[in-house]
Length: 369
Image 1 (cartoon, rainbow, N blue to C red):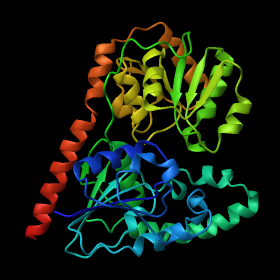
Image 2 (cartoon, rainbow, N blue to C red):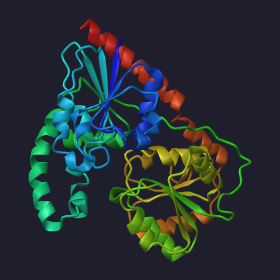
Image 3 (cartoon, rainbow, N blue to C red):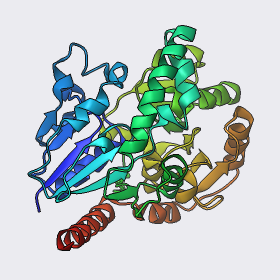
Image 4 (cartoon, rainbow, N blue to C red):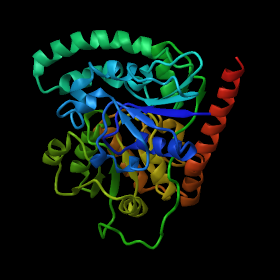
């Protein structure tokens, strides 16, 4: 069974990249097709054969792919997969739109329906740097992009969602039921328990890309009022703006190594997740360190956290809700053993075993047909 992988773009580190590393572990010879590839920001792909599209040759495309969204459909439609038995697209944007012949099985692992076209359309419109003129241009372009996206979402032979929340979105936006839900892989190893507190005092932790959709500003406003130390791990387009609005008790670390990140998890009081998440890999990582999670209940959080058992879920994404949950968490005790047991359900080993078995069975059925 000859397998090819497809992903939107290979120029960052995040949850989706951990999925691709696991898929590479299952099928080490599978090449990875993508729109643009920046090896300097994607060290995780150094052992993978990465095949970028023609967009790779455009000046600035590797770091500013967001302005080429209009060309992404063409980039993925021009790839030739005729020599492969199975194509696995991992996507929250355009990679799902690859075209395969009937003999090739296309399995789409959906991270979420394209957010800037659907669930976060207004957020992205307001965040564009060109103001009202930018909104007008984007609305026109996104009209055609949405029509293409609707067609592209039907191309895969099989649709797998990363969570029940994403499965529901696929039903709403694509009018298509998921064939399965397979949770993404998480490194649930406990790590060295004898590490030193990196801050030297109690603190809360937030790990996220610093972009508008993550609602990190809610956590900052909350801890500006509370005054408790908050460590924010991550980078993104909002970093400067978020730093400017944060008080002295809030510390930004930028990117940290996996070892350092595990250390931050091990010594925090609780993990804070203020926005709606498709699944929530960082939440599971916190649980694997035996730490409770305070999260917005909408999205994947409700599939990971049982309220009052593994942390606290708040029902509205606002400062007062987060603040109330933080105060409540201070007076509660959570069993580290129970938290780690919950995290183990989402281990990399379970993902790889489940995903490989699903793909092989699907291919056998497809091949017989």
